Image 1 (tube, rainbow, N blue to C red):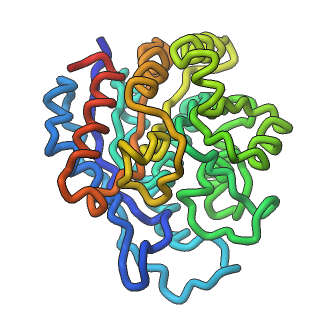
Image 2 (tube, helix red, strand yellow; image 1 turned 180 degrees about the vertical axis):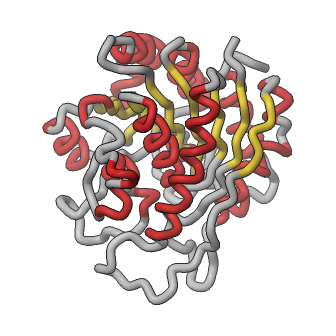
Length: 299
């Protein structure tokens, strides 16, 4: 069995404020899942916390590029240091976010080591960049574009390692069927995209097994799994910043994740976007913990 190590990455630097004068509550994700005893249930070792800079957009305005960019760049390096150390030691990091920009820490860490793929399980592809949008700003909706080298240099070329991910090494799962424009661009770049409807048509487990096999090629050193809680349907996971309808249900998500995470070529997982501020009873957090634990083969 893998040597799980749980690392907290409680950064909310990549999200827009939910209301003026407030900050996104997803930085509480790790604490909420820890309250559900995720560390004990996984039989994991303690990996500690990578503390993020303060959330402060200052006088940022639309058109200024990515807000909190300096903080995100510094945090990406620090988180990459932690993840790199565990991967090189043969551990399996389970990184609890935070918003989706924490995935840059994993991508940078793995780029330092070699060439790795990404299986992104997300309601949206997080591929906004200057070539397709005039509303650049929130890195939590742009991290895959940034990781593949699209966007401002102070985020895309840390340590001179751009791109952290190659286009052809990225796979998307659980994208809502309505995001047809995004899908056309991704397919043109040879980034496979599987929507919710296609997962149901072809079967999540079969697709995941085929993907794990596709990542098991000599050119790749392994792959990472990114899980955004908003891939779940809002009837079961309302506590996210963009609760789009027609998402996956827990059993479908577990069936998709389990073969990916069980692959000997999978080197880690991050979990993002769940916001405990939007879940006063803690039921969505308990469900997300159950999904992660079951997907990792524990109870």
